[in-house]
Length: 92
Image 1 (cartoon, rainbow, N blue to C red):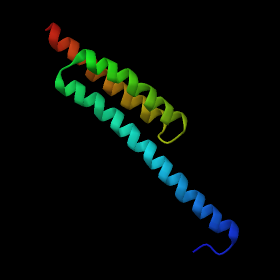
Image 2 (image 1 turned 135 degrees about the vertical axis):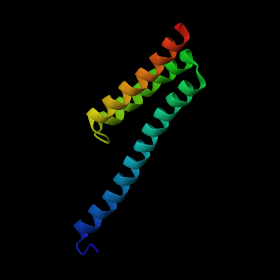
Image 3 (image 1 turned 90 degrees about the vertical axis):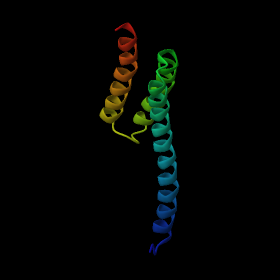
């Protein structure tokens, strides 16, 4: 338990920041799931549109250091490969 006024204030600030970061992580997961859902539906045009929207969300959250930049890059890479894979399936 925090004893000093400073420690109490830091505890309040930490709780507020943790809630904010959790909301941003949820936003990231939702953006990824939207792309995955479009890919699962087999809609390449919709998946590409969703990918572009999700990319900005992922980058924004990585810039705020909620997730590491390499993690964000890996997630984007996997999503792009999945979307491009839809085009290859149709061509084949």
